[in-house]
Image (cartoon, rainbow, N blue to C red):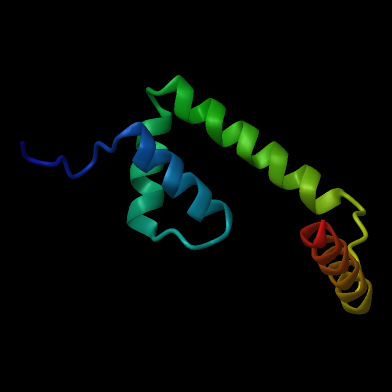
Amino acid sequence: MKKSILFISCDEAMEICDRSQYGEASFWEKLKLNFRFCWCKMTRSYSKQNKKLTKIVKDSNVECLKEEERQDLHQTFDAFLRKQDQY
């Protein structure tokens, strides 16, 4: 079966949508994605939800563990596992 130049599958559209959001999609891929938006409700919905999720993650004020805190936690966890193995 010959692959169409302008028509893309839903899976391919979702992949391009993800890459487009991070500035990794080419002009041609964006063009094909926009063409699919014209007639595919599911692709439009996926794109809308993806943009909303990205905005929420960017706007969140999540504080991550510092490197030394992460190492301490890792060492504590390893010590606990070694203790469990002894029993």
